[in-house]
Image (cartoon, rainbow, N blue to C red; front, side):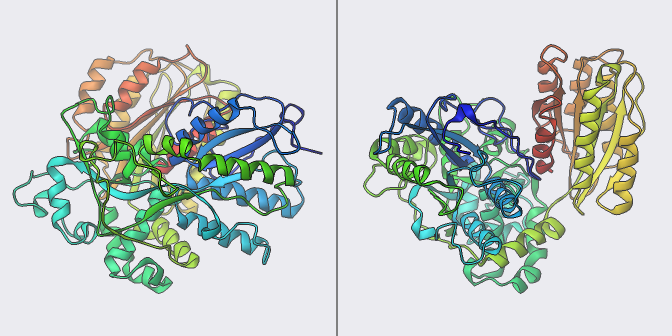
Length: 579
């Protein structure tokens, strides 16, 4: 069987432990389609699976390249499709497919295999090569870092508002300072008195989060990343945990976190570990609801340069025709015309001699020629130890009240899909995570506490099995009840949040939406409680009011997503990364 003609191949759904939202869109957590990838057509498909930092670059380049009707030297037509996911998801996806190939459950020609890869930095590139070599020893399916052509790069920076930047620049190492400092005035006596609150992406899913975690270990240990050992991870994890205690929220998308910083202000997060390109975007026209607020990139004395490379596997799932087409695609992506797209997006070019765009200027909060020591990746086993340490020890604890609509309209596939999704959520609870599971219809039921222990998971499974669909939808009352429960049972040094899943509009509540909004403001991020709200509209358009769910979430530093029986598992998997 060949996978060269798209129309003749059924696209199979790949079920992963870390799911993505789907093909030809940015799966970074933003709603909506990721850009202008060419729709299905005849010819050889060159499937690109890239980290989320390159999603717009990939889409724009693909649209231009496909418009040229590219061909191989033998005359065979080909076209590009782009999918952008977290760098950790790129690695997981490819490794999962490689394992299925090894087990004989799929063949090399399977249409799920991407042809050309990119992750947003060299740590995940190193991890992919390391894990693939363990699966297929001595085969060198993934090229060395130095053999993968550069497409673009962006240094990791600390993003903050202008009046806070001076304090961050005044200290020798911001992460070392974060171990003990609680207020920005401790960094700058003349600066504003503001609690240090911090965001970075989850290192298990996102390159920027992984680079940030490695940098934190390097900072508190006083060692370069490549000199760190597994023993060092154990030795310094408590100091990293002190930094993590300042985290407001995690996430899978660097860009989404930066946008949330802009939308929610410094009480939500005063500092974020992001790409330099995110700062440029934050200062671009239309990005900020308050155009007077400016953001600056603070370049640590030592940081990672996020090198985004084109990774062409020398593997049995890449045919000779696909390899030839991918090589032409790489050449095209590195051409001056397409590299100019990268600089326009705030990414530094991957090819010498390509000029920076006008956005690389203080007006956009960045330095055209920053000076810093560029870190190199640690050994892969040390990275594994850091990720395990983060999940088991250093990660900020969380307590999430999941409020489940079980009204009569949830009967049938809706409820069973929701039950399966909740089961997956409970099964994957980490040791630092706690849930309060609440169901509501015309009645609001008391929460069931579920922790990441065998006994806790059993309680969660019993709750899920007992769910039945009937009655009305007291949405507003249930939201307030969940907030009140959290307020009375706040978990110290933890992310406290409410996650609402509903398929309908409110009916029968004792309070109005405006009354709910007024109550939620009392426990938002300008208060000591700092309770976030997230909402999922579940079902078909018209069955629920997305504007209402957006308002409930955005009042308290969260966001709204839409799901249905086919996508709810993916939506919930992404939400679980936030906490």
